[in-house]
Length: 241
Length: 334
Image (tube, rainbow over all chains, first blue to last red; front, side, top):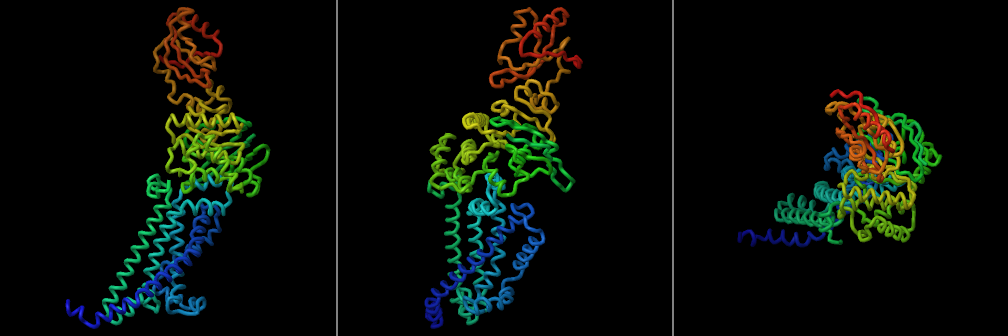
């Protein structure tokens, strides 16, 4: 052990970690947040349409259109992320002008994540009590009002919990993006750790990723519980009333 | 006035067409408390949803004060729905909103100013007797309290019609009575027409003025509650009014008569006075009577004495009683 700690390589790795980890954490969080936000900008409306436009939905859309949407969502979800990332590179070049670094992975992450987000949104809204929609219709709500004022607010806790799942999944995808030239903690573990045989760097980066996931998950779950008014026990946890 | 004219509703199913409603015609007058009763599966819920077009009839007309809802475009229909409120068995409150915000909801939809809406909502909380629940969430309330909030919400936009879809079926008997009393009170004070869907005759007895009996998607009979309860004309009506049936075949007596009470004072001791006034003793073989608005309705099966003059005396006495009709039960098999 004494050898390990007195080894100059160890000292170099530790100072490398200390120097580079803050920026890597920043890159990871920043790319994950931006990709998740964009994934939801597309996925949320898409998820809503998957529910409302269905045959038994409140505003059924033509069946071929719905089938096409479902095929696109399933197709994008079935392509492995690493391959999708390579396939999406040309799109990335058009939109952001680059395919490398942290900006380079935003487009692939978004493309990979929005169908996932759409499915999460879809299942959150579907689990809502249908009676609420009927009640809203009986009060003279338009389709848009039902979506805005009933569906989304009533499924908010479930939507948030889905958002959290998506966020953490995208964080994991982002780490993989290191393999094709992305930035962040994943790239650090792969490029500086694995490729250069600096195991301390690998472990350091991985431990930070694990800690980040834990923090987001528990903070997120806490928030979801606070917002959930659907059970009397949830009230007490919320503590507001 | 609500007029349903020749309403039919057919649902396509995997096993073919399901005729939920067949040629239903009903007229519900302003200020009525109109009960639509039937067993489960009779089509009650579909019928009440035809009144606000949550279900669009396959054929027929829904006229509210003469205006045909089926002919309206979406915008006109939405406007019309604001004057037809609905409450539900499962209350259907928005769980993520406080009670106050729930009551504000229909006003929000109708673009009422927020301050005005909240003021009105607080008034309505008083009307339904829950002034202290403004900031509570529905999950914190009991079933009866939730239904009160739902009623307050239903009244928010000053409706002319209140549809109640099995509104008390999820509640215990005492809460049911309280809620029915509240609905009756609202009907009397505000003059709102109430349509009550239920499978419980007790609910009809408690609050309805008129009743329609629905069976297998068809209206079997309609009338005032007094008429239908005292003398149901159809098999479906009898099944609902006397759910336990009257099994005359099992009753031992020489001659059996059925008397029907048509609304005298409820507990006039008819049988006792029969014994005292003409000294005839009869056996009560079966009875199903009920008290509707302080009047007696229902039937009683009487076994007359074996001695023919005695029996004739009893028959003559009963014939002279007001509010009673009498018939001999001939299909009695001892």
